[in-house]
Image 1: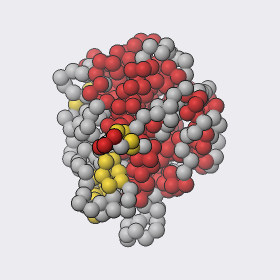
Image 2: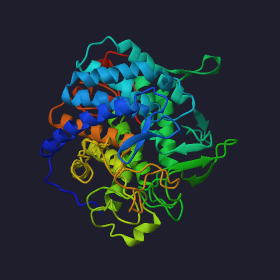
Image 3: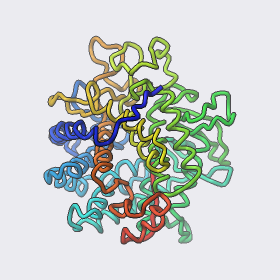
Image 4: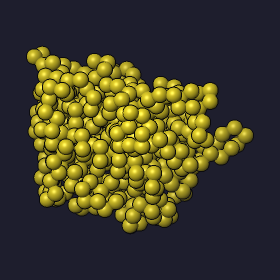
Length: 462
């Protein structure tokens, strides 16, 4: 179980946050030189011996590369990184806006166009790109919402790139694209000019994710442990009936792939900030409770709670990234820490806030923070796809360690930005600028925040 430090404050972490941003700057520029966005090598995904490489599956990490430069500017004010992020957003991200084949719109487009819009709304940069960013976000949300499969209970879900039978837990955070498009007053136009409400579609997807990918200890099956998640839920596309739990990147459908758990933690917590809902609250609390109860003492999880090699490890001790049996996944911890912090703020429950701070402290120090300028990664000991064996195993090691992922690096930066904003606001949300703080809570952030933004209607998370 995570050993929560109840005395830790965001301000205590500012020196470590500052050090991280100092290290981050050189790594962003190094990756920009070795893997320029839009290049023939494809988007960087994970490191091999400290150098970023691509993996031709989907280009779901491109927005994390480009968005990292914008986060660096956001945190440090270094104009070089704003210009870099802006240039690449305009130059290479347009195909991701209209990409009909993936469930990753929130990852790619909120991290880039969404960040530009947020920076404009906060008065950090001029508004020359506002119309471009808002048009891109409208289209992205509608395209994401069009990947729709109906369920037998009258709901539905945004299906994964595996096909219309597949509901991924990851998508709960990528659905931020629907949220922002809704805030901008946009709708999805269907057959016969049917106007499909994006917030309604988002809520239906979230409800399906909570029902079929998150467990609540209600006896759904003999593995129904409250708060655990399954990576994929499978449906009969002929009648929409649920068929079985499944997994792509986890060990089994009856164990918990911890990065999928982290996506649910953060996705539902952000939804709760955007739109008050008992369902979102229950799902966020259940998954966050499971993470706290099943993480090692320092808050960095092993890659799957059912991984067979865990029998050889003391899972109650701090995680050992150099063990000989199972890899840890620091990227799951970076995502989860932000989910814990956001849930703590949304609910006022100090336990979640302190848990998030405790995990953040672990990640902002060695052996997780990459201090070697020759290593392009920022957050060490991240894994991508353990079952497929895609992660690099160094000579003399038996499991992957010492490498980084583009999403892990991005979410460590996002976590650091969030921590800095807790000390010196405005409060950071994906769906707005200073108005998110002014609204005073999740209920008004979903309603009154619309007029404060100076745009149409609104929504959240994935």
